[in-house]
Amino acid sequence: MKLGRVLATLVLILAVSFSSICSAAALKYGDRGDAVKEIQSYLIAQCLLNIKANGVYGTETVNAIKDFQSAIGLEADGVCGDETYKILRAAAFDEIDINTFKLGDYVPDYELEIDDETDTPKSTGATIGSVLSAVSTVKEVAQYAGVGDVIKLGMQGDGVIELQNKLIEHGFLEGEATGVCDKYTVDALKDFQKSRGLTADGICGKRTYRAFDGGDESYELNDLEIPNCVRVVRVEATAYSSAQAGLSAYTAMGTLCQHGVIATDPHFIPLGTKVFIPGYGYAVAEDTGGAIVGNKIDVAFDTVGECYEFGRQWIDLYILED
Image (cartoon, rainbow, N blue to C red; front, side, top):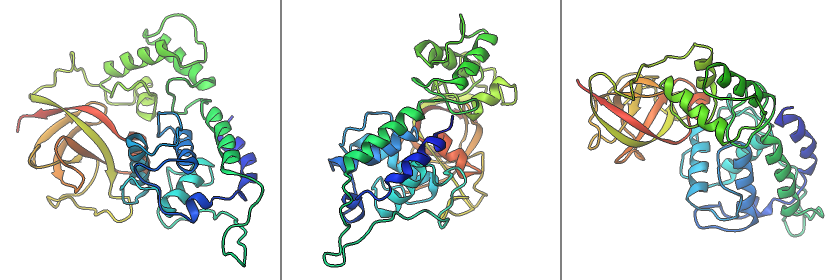
């Protein structure tokens, strides 16, 4: 059962009045109301937002919007304007494939009937509340995990059964597979990820699946003791790719922007510094960015899909000797 199959039945609501977003100013930090609740529901449906849709455009919503914008190549300003909203909604309703989407690709328009006299959307008898009800159904469906899907706390389905069987097989989980990703499953998954040198976030994505199959790089960390490590710093990491529209193929140092490169604040981590990132590998600080200040870094990937999967997370960065 896939999210898209259920979402297809929800497209019938497209004639709903979206004037709260389409005809009003962009949504930003501090805004409140049903329009905010709507975009939060879309973010939740894509596992980008981990709070309840409360209608308050707070820091969590800003960061989730930034992650989405960064993944699709928009300016990551955390403001939900017309373009961000249009693509976000199409992604939530499975009308575009966010992993392959590029700016300029076709995005379905919303069929709004405009009143000729008032030049505003005609009332369809539906309300934002009815849309939120539909999105609530979407969120429930999003909790289903098929085999190979990204799995996190609270999800259930055949994919969770397979994950639990893998954890049992590798000796990290006791008992039988229940099909529900509960706290015990997440804790076992974190232990497995640590044992393979992955980021122990308790979320099973592509890298964790590869690790189960022995196809991912495994680092014998010995309690995260990295050879030639001189210090460890805690940093907030985001991801970027030269495949994103508007980004250069070259770094600030003139090297190719590719896997193995990170952007840093040179005052915090000087350019040329060699580092190790669990779950990513070895990298060199060769790039900078306007939003990369202090203990923030940007990790380079070869594809936008990998950036989307990485998202935003706090990680331990291992600074290595020259």
